[in-house]
Amino acid sequence: MAQRLYECMFLLDSGRFATDPQGTETQLRDLLGKCQAEIVSMGPWQDGKLAYPIDGHKKGLHFLVYFKMDGGQVQELNRLCRLSDQVIRHMLIQQPGKLFDMMSHALAQHGTAGEQAAAPAEPAAAVVAEPVAAAAT
Image 1 (cartoon, helix red, strand yellow):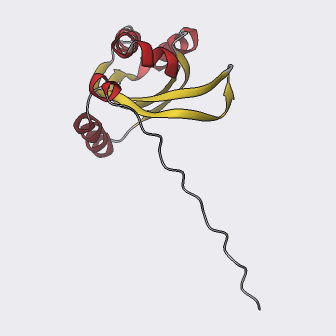
Image 2: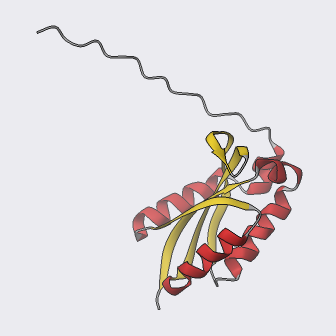
């Protein structure tokens, strides 16, 4: 099969990542390597409290990876993610070429996992929508 372009968001145990960011990144590289994936860019995206507990985890780290892989390896990647004690959840999306290039380049410019782990992570600001008053008719 032909190489396809993928974006995968991994939800990882933030405690494990905080104690060993390089080891966590290596485990993800190994997991993707077992599926013959060619990693284009990868890095942590957001760390924080989850909306609801998942498998007993109340906090998690979203780790974003852009890679090229044979489409026939998707089932194997899903299987390996389910078996991994490192990956809490994952979401795999096939990307169109132009979007893949733009997003993987932006992630690569943002920095590598090691550089971002060295800096203290700031939680994303919450966006609170103001209630809209109903117009009187």
